[in-house]
Image 1: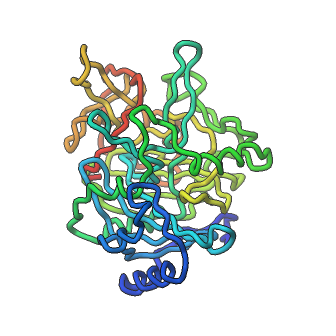
Image 2: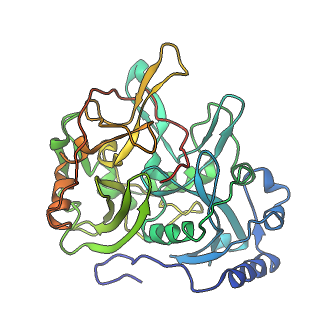
Length: 392
């Protein structure tokens, strides 16, 4: 149910122990619910249970129950195996395995598909969009469409930290995710169909499908404009606070879920020892798809969602070597001491009026201990496809 702020509160992991959760899950499958993975396990889905993918945790969001394993990782990602079961409707007979992974921005996302070959190894990051014009048009991932609901982000982090030693797992992506050819950036219809239906319904679009936040001058963080009503309500809209340690960010990172003045969207702010950044912007409507993501995504400028450390490195695998960066040009700071492929984005972030207002009104005016030093950079020609598991 909605709370007094007009939005749904964050959910917590159910108070059932791992044995009880596993028993409840087995009873569901043995009672007739069909386990239907999209990957290599689709012909023998029972192998997921035999090979150690029984869930240990359970939560409920809206009309779905989500079962979760403990954390796993490989050289690319840190992840949880999730099973989605709908409480009513035609999907009630299905249990859908998914892969939830943690992005460098510290936002939990769902993988939409997999590309793995001798030349490529990456996971699909949700829907796609066309950028540029004419001969310069290209298709790129719209990563925000893969963001898992803000209402479960803290619960996922709790499940992620349930083990001190994280086992390595190279099999799960192949078992769970539909595999595409090397050039397959777009997800498959099971991911996109709910979004297309939502986009076709004017009543479900946020601000009529138009952007709610954009920079009026490219490369100028001070030029941010937000449509009135969609600004985060820093005084009365903070509906959740939590914290967790991060090696990448050098200490404790605080997380704040904050709804807008009109209660139609919500923002996820992070405050680390050094940086403040906005991880996600989502609808507040109580609906999710079979991939556990909302079918409607507010349109905001990508540069509003730059994390504290973002990719900024020289790609030596091409000739001539090419600068790859997801930090606005001229604002990349020092490399991360943990991962030199990522640079400090403080110089960009600290100049955004929304970040300044958050520091002033939520953090009491406290600034980061140190600012990044702006050095020349370049925008990437395409977004990096791999996400390192790393210590995030």
